[in-house]
Image (cartoon, rainbow over all chains, first blue to last red; front, side, top):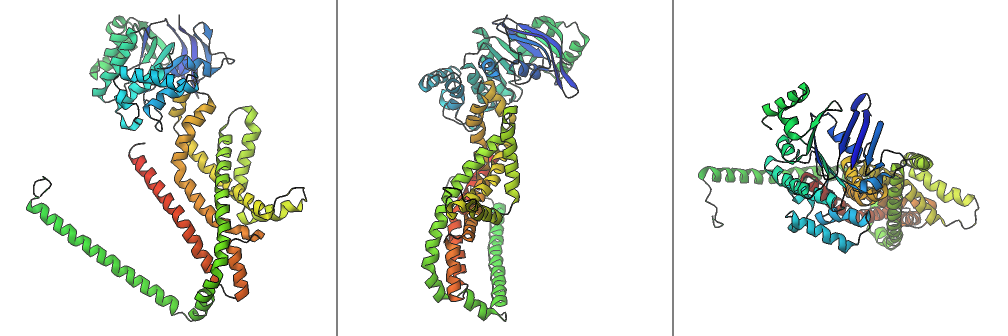
Length: 246
Length: 282
């Protein structure tokens, strides 16, 4: 097991965002987190990446407890890649510099070496001609693909994707989803928060429905999305279908 | 039309002609009102009962010519001090701003001192700081006390450093937290995040106000004359005392304006560019 979240609690003020939440992710597995806004999807991902401190419970990555306060968070984050809803590329750096920043500064690879693997990745995703562009010259879909490359170039053990298509125009969603599908084919372990139910059904090995900071239902996509057991899950999916998103 | 566009319709041609007539009318109106206001001001000043005496004691061409070389020589000192003080004040301001962002109990005293410093030196009038530095520090009779020039410069650096620190801090705080999250999620340490992600964006964003403070520093450099060094203001004061005529001050003022013009032009240009970039969406 690569990632194990056990009984995690996260509280913001008086709001309980994660409530005794547990989740196991095996290597090469893709887990999709679904649920309404505020159900705790993003917070869970941020806790795994130690961008937020848990208020209780334990998170284990690769057999080591990372919620131990004596653990160096920078070291943990080096093994995890994260992609955000709003891309969060560095606007003052070119695409190439965005991608090579962590390999050269954090992983201490040579500039030539980092540039080479960055170029390889950019060619793979069809953005080789954008290497020297600044992020604001790119479309949302292109920016998000660069953000994914920026995370992947560090060879993470685990990739966290936080609603990576939510800010995109509908016609740009496909290019990002195709890239994620390819990553799955290569065996990348991923936890993704998403509103794209159709995509979750295709790509996920397991769909986890969060509600009020708890795992309400979890299982193979066909079961959770097709014949959910919990009334809350049914209600949520009914609303999604009503909105024409499934 | 020769550039391939279809010829404008009659309605469009009518609009173009109308707009042109309006534009010509606005220019003429602006010229007329400027001329009128100018005439009124000139008449009011030159027609005043004391104008002859004021003209003789402030605008004497003979004395202006005589005092010019000394004032200009003094200005060279201002320029050198401006460059040195601006560089040091910017460095000090950046350092203080970064110190104020440090978290953790170890840094509490550093953070507290940086905060007290910015509060104190933004409050104390610059003249008092110059007096304290230039006359107070030598009074300690310490070995190796530098001259009044250096002490006066230090007073400027310390005062402006406090203002610039706040400008830098505003810039640092304007960088969106999602940028920090992105940097930290890549495994960058706090220092690396500051150095490579936050500060480059912060400095770019506050470049206009930083330059504006440099323009203000440019004229406040003249205040070190209070401590004794012969800069442009001091040279003008000496010339004024020799002739019982204030014209040298006007000479110094004109030179200060000329010195400030390029800096102001650069500030406006940077501000415009920053505004354009902001409107472009980052």
